[in-house]
Length: 102
View (cartoon, rainbow, N blue to C red):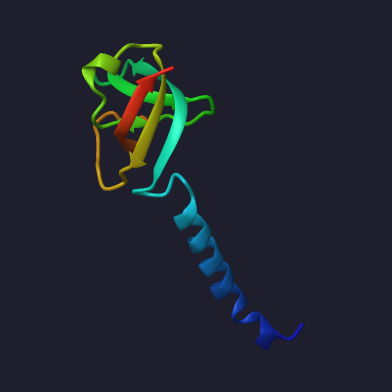
């Protein structure tokens, strides 16, 4: 293949990767619904987490006290908030848009 034809290839691949990343359900400010377990993580005096069945851990920024029960099974609609920070640093910070027990 001609080197001239290969020049635009990195740009095309970068654009494709960017498009895929922006459409991923865990991209910043995207909403998604998961079945998960609420857990109290023993760091920094205790941090609440929402953990789906995979290895991801989400840190909810606004988990209501009624749902702050270690081991509680929930279905939650979340919005990832990469514009927020936390001292817990246990996973991506999420805003809880809706939550109910399962």
